[in-house]
Structures are given as C-alpha cells and as structure tokens.
Length: 366
Image (cartoon, rainbow, N blue to C red; front, side, top):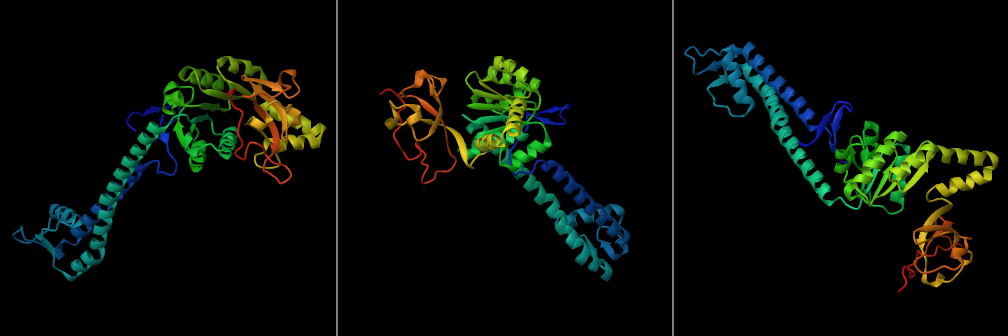
C-alpha cells in the first residue's frame, strides 16, 4: 500500500494490513518471472545468431543475418508479430523454430503478459479488499499479541459466538502473522505502542481490546495509547508480574489478568489438592465438563434468592458492581441483575441451562 512506511527496526513494512489466504509478495514473483522471460529472449537470440546461415534476411542484399537482425527476429517472433522479412531456410533452422523457438514463444507470453495481468489484478483486488475491510470495520475486537495467550483468547471469543471477521490481530512476529492468517484473521503488522499502527487496526472504533504482549512495559504503553484513542473501549490486559497490575490499571485497563500468578496458583492448588486443581482446569477449559458463564436474570427468577436457582450462582452483577451470592445486598434478585454461574458446558437432560430456551429476561424495571 502506498501509505505504508518501512520501519528498519522491524525489518518489514510497518502498518501493513495482512489479510488471510493471499500472496504476500506479488511484485517479487513478477520480477522473478520477468528475469525468466529475459532469459528466454537472450537464449533465443544466441540460438538464431549461432545458426544465422540457416536464415535469410530479405532486407540485406546478401541475405546475411547480423547479430542486430537476430535480436530483431527474436523480438518479433516471441511477441508473435512475425513480419516475415527474416525467415529460416535450412531444414535444421526450421526444426529449431518448430520444436524450440515456438515453445519458447509460448512460455515467453505466459510469463510476461499472463503474469503481469495476474499480478496487477491481484494487487487491485487486494487493495479493494483492504479498503472494504477498513470501511466496514467497527465495534470489533482488537487483539494485541498473537502468542499463546492471544490465540487462547481468540479461540474463546470465537467459541462464544464472536464473528471471526470482527477480530483484528496486531503483531510484529512473522510466525504470529502466519498463524493468525492461517486462522482466517486479519493482521495489522507493527508495534502496538505506536498510534499509527493502532489507528490502522481501527482501535478508535473498537468495542474491546485485548493486550497480551510478552512484556509488561509494552502492555502499559499499549494500554495508554489505546485508552487515549478510544476512551470507551473495554480493555483487558495481561501482566506477567503482579506488582505491575496497578500500573496497567492506572493506564486505563478495565481488567488486568496476572498470568504468572494465575498459573502459579493453579500449580499450587494441583499440588495440594489434585482434585481441586482438576476442577479449576475444567472450569478454564471450553466446551468440556463445567463452565463459568454470565447470563441475564429471567423474569421467573425475580425476587428469588441466588441459592434457590437451578444454576449454581457464584456472583450477582448489580449496577455494575459484583456481589458474592451470599452478600446481603443480593438476598433477593431484582430486575436488571446479571448472574455469574457455574453450569454444564453442554446441556444434559438432568442439568438444564436456564436462559438458553428463549425465556423472557428481566433486563429492566419496566
């Protein structure tokens, strides 16, 4: 794209939008095929020149085919123009024309004309696709960093109904770019701490931003920049060290996940109580056994106690505050409440999942 910049620190085009399942270097392919076409041209000139006694030039009084005439004959022959002023007269020259130069002519046309049209059309289509993507992108999710945490976050989003076309990955690593494109995700190549890169990813119009780089300082800078570009986005950021969590919170993150502490606690629980560790692992694994979910309160559940519901309620969200199920504030459930529940990952005959059968939700006071 014409507005991309070359960043020598990254060794690639900064800000390039990488759409999945497309050739990333068409101009390199065109250059390579042009060199092959030039090779065919030079080889044919030499072939005609070394056997110039087998040809006649009607423009020369003696019919002599010079080196210049050999170049002329080759160009008009390979381009299928064929004026006829130079022609093979010997049997050997005619056989060479039939079985060598004619296939070379076909290869030359395929390489030069066909490839040029293909590359130009491919470039045009790619530019149109990127322009259409930029125009339609909004209320999407931006994932900064496509390592192990980023891939798991995207997988969870998709498994819970997020449209794959509404996810944009920002990363600099070629392996991460290839993995994201293989997963049919759009990638903006570049450093996510830079404003221009985040603008290309449409952060200003994003609904959610997930930040999962491998460095806490990068996470802090990315969080600050995202919050400045989009004051309303919901930002979730990973942090490796617990001591950096308050800093990322102050930078504008709505939620901070401490990866090292979370893994350490799970390891400790598994060591002290293998059964408890297995249950926690089950809760964190999508689609198997148990799952933790948030759902709206049903009309039939208004006025009831959290402990009386079919789902195992562990928290109630009221007025954007989270209360534990045993908190006196939520002794009776009210319209507008949302429930955080533990339920089967897949509905079973003896374990129904309320809120998944088109029930009426108690979402407001009306």
